[in-house]
Image 1 (cartoon, rainbow, N blue to C red):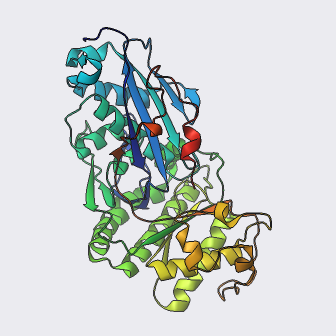
Image 2: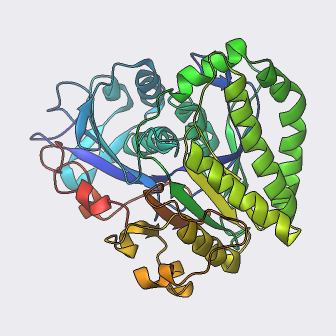
Length: 426
């Protein structure tokens, strides 16, 4: 290392979350996080749902430290340690001529890191916050340490933090190949199509609950693997064929097949949870009402207009075949799950707010004027949905060059307390 005085080098990255349309549930190797089946996901637009991570290095740091959403957390867990170890072993020489800093490969083992991460959406509520978080951690550290690995190779590292994280290293539609090798080197993510391939799709998320789920995905998977006969049948007999069908549907932009496969796989995943002993309940009554609304609408139209999928939580991810359908979907949802009278519509529908104007829903009067959809008899469930997020398929991770996005102070490497508020979902 070469420098005349203490210095701090840092990078800031933004990584999207992803939602699986063919689910990952169950591991064949707990320590390496190797799945029992392939999975496929769609990456969500990071302008609407993302993790921002700043990673910094300095000889002044006396230990590795991390802050998540403004609070310091421990890095002692095996998942963090696995990711840090794998990245450090791949680190290369780094030189910053502006700061007169040169870090040689051998120096990385002695240097400590500060990491700050912020999710602009609920953590541990079934919206894949850990996927975005570990993907962003690995991506940011790889850039800080000048790691010469492609995205698929990085995905194998992110996978060791959170299985689904490997899919957030790419935009568009992504497949996580389960692999066959014991060391997991062939269990990587690959991009099926980029985000522009099927840009007609619009995604609306109903955040039914932002509370942390009672049964974590990790413990839920373990219990399912140990007790569910349906899971074994699903992994061996159902998913392999379903993955091939889903790849074909995505390639051909065949929404009817895509919707049928997505809904069926979500329902089977939650059936596996119920088949687990003791049974796991991730969805709630509001989740079931949303499923009923979409199923009745799809049947009445004779062809699917909307696909739904639920990860390990009650929040509904609905994928509309085009913008016009998305407008109708939002209208139906707002009739069934209206905001409270004193709620500003701009805080009830987040993300891509332009859909509000297109749907004629600029104010509360617009919701009151909407006609109840024929699919629903008891049409008002006020207060059951916290808010909606409108988004679309999005790109993979990027570095943020604007230093105002940094979550750590460039002089001290400690949290920049004013930064997280800038990244709240809006």
